[in-house]
Length: 236
Image 1 (cartoon, rainbow, N blue to C red):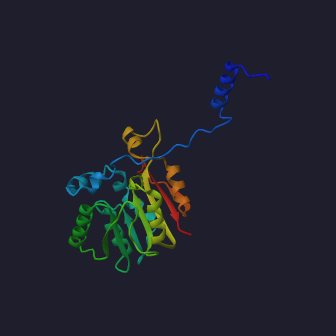
Image 2: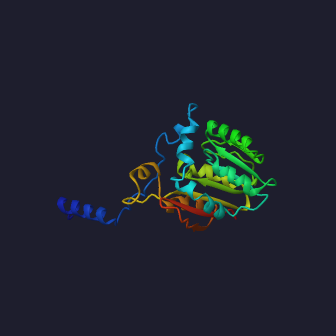
Image 3: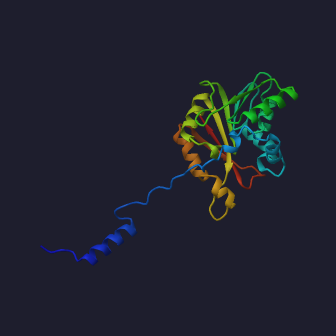
């Protein structure tokens, strides 16, 4: 019986593996950086420090707030979940836009942020707003309770994205909308901080949301956005 020479066999094995005849490269996995939410869960969190970061014109999503509000297409009387509400500046805008017949749920994993949002709403005379302490896997809202879920610069912080998306899907009414703003992650173009902080690119995030049952509608071009993007989805 003839045998392949050992050298020839090894050469064939290397060639097959190199060209992918026998095996495909494993898909790239996306992993949330360890401790990405530790600052927000810290009971010593200094809200004033984050106000200086979040509510400044140099931050794209703050400077573009009027354009973003328009892209959300909010109607009077709607119920809105601001997920990852942070300091709550979008929650306050939503509360004014939806009016007294509507309602806003400011959802966050940080009790300190929620305390700030509640106090600021009281000081500003906003009565159609409720704070909700979310978890790593749920926004903790009742089924079919909201018309719009808004996630700004927060989706990449989801530690269990599919579980969180499932809770969002349940909370939305049929025909309800999901708006996601996040950072472009483009190797060779994006800042090193974004490459290390944001676990995946726009296309991956979009596919995750579609896999959770949503229909992708469109991407809205926001003039002030250089590092961010805005995607819109619908619950069928």
